Length: 460
Image (cartoon, rainbow, N blue to C red; front, side, top):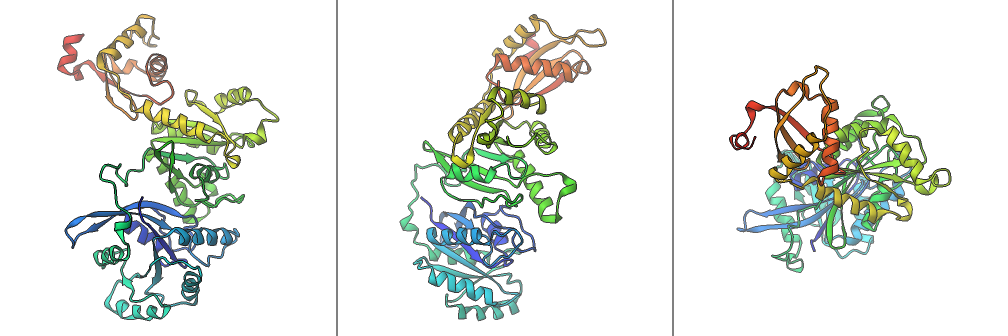
């Protein structure tokens, strides 16, 4: 069990920048527009004990939406509930204020909220954006908020970063959170499962169902989720991390830099995921956005479970068999991907989706011995193979698996130009029938005979 550090503050004080600094990587979108962070975004961080000569400590860092946000999406009550929940579970609260804008009435409101919440949790006042000596002098005005001497830091430049780490370490009794020496690495997120889909397909609802609590804001208003939110959860003692992504929409429909960057983060989540859950809203027709995501998945060879969500709305007009036929026609290229029917709002199909994702995770990491692979290829070739349009017979001399995730097969052949896309498609489909890769993408590299390794020459 790790201590929980919760970041709280008004909008636009640099909470996301501070989270990225502590995590030592870009976890959250940083944008000058208030209201980018709306959900509780969490990650496990490492706190180095540089000046103590001891091993690093770990903590679960949670960023909350800016308190007092007003926008036209009417999400303020949900954001405030997320903040209240964060306060209730925190072992340390980082109350962030802005040195350059000075003390504001909203800072005083947040301070009053913390004091009246009944929390007994230690509160560390953090003055962010301290980029110069005069900012340090001005920062002492925040002491009137009643939380003692502030920690001064610049999340962007890293000014006073190590002193800030020391203040955090002094604020938490880590003896209450002993890390088991034999336990798994607390920073290990487990398999990364990206939930991708168009707007309002039910991604956030599914993440909350998997986590067993409301970790991300759910709204009927499309575009509620703007950042990619990592949520750790456990099933049968196994740790997973679900990545809730912003809904993808047509590029010409993007509204400003935040939506553009949100879409970019969604597509990047596909690339960093171990497995994708492609959520299809069964109450709507397949769209160009769905097909764009399929292309992104295929381009990066990501194992994918097609999750047909909101099935309770569609099962009255279609059977599962009919819908599978419809998907095969609409989502060409993913015919090998397994399909799961869910109703995330009722928690139906969640375990099946994760069970299937774990199966694909293991398939993608499977390695086939070279001898077995070549035997399979010879059997495939003996049953016949398509001829080139040039009339010359393509020949495969030798094959070996050079990588996993995705399974990558190198073919050493007579004339690489003879192996066109149709031949490779035929060959990959046959490999799926014979090997333990039946439901994941397979990457094929075609090489000339002159590139063969020496031991391969001896076997041909």
